[in-house]
Amino acid sequence: MGVAKKFAVLLCAEDSDYVKKRYGGYYGVFVEMLADEGETWDVFRVANREFPDDDEIGDFDGFVITGSCNDAHGNDVWICRLVSLLKKLNSLKKKVLGICFGHQILSRALGGKTGRAISGWDIGVRTIHLSPSSSKLFSSLKIPTALSIIEVHRDEVQELPPKAEIIAWSEKTGIEMFRYGDHMMGIQGHPEYTKDILSHLIDRLTQRSFIEESYGDELKAELEKVEPHKDAWKELCTSFLKGRV
Image 1 (tube, rainbow, N blue to C red):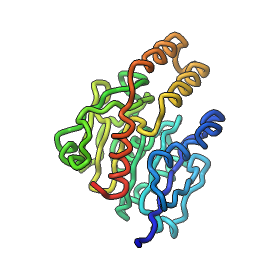
Image 2: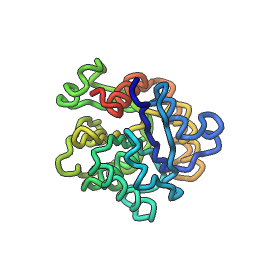
Image 3: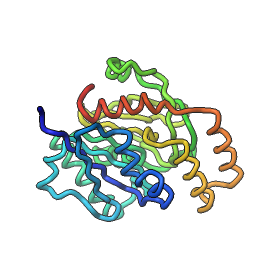
């Protein structure tokens, strides 16, 4: 028997009471999607300045960076510290999967640029298109080349890091996914989200006046009509993180 694999979630968001109660927090949401039996999954609440020590980084087989309501182009102390950690993980060739804010901060750490999306908020279930090279990369998974995913963001990767490759795009966002070497990948959407979580987030955005109430109602009505490809995303993310592609 091989040694059990060990992974860490770098949590960049505060858990809402709802997500905490229903899903065990965002950490629970990611473990539900990514964990296999026998693995160890730890969480570091980096937004609360809780980081892995330098001498324990090597113990982990991979890291997942979550979404956040913060800006990846910001310079909060914890964000700058996260950028430094990601540079270190890159030098060690550790597997890193960045989701939404995680996708953006990973790009920044590798030399790319992030900022507000010119087209504004992107909220809902969107179709993204895998590039020909990524279709080849994931060919063993037999997943569609057009995949639906839940999106909720107003920032985006504006410029790829040097040597990175776009592996998916959508009509609204030019860099939906990128790959850096064989060890780092960013996804702008939320493969881990359920429509229930998105509906809850739309309510929070409305309550905080980030979006108009009428727009929130429209978004929730649209949610009834479409489904994200959750199983395909689970296969893609776990296969990347665990070195099966």
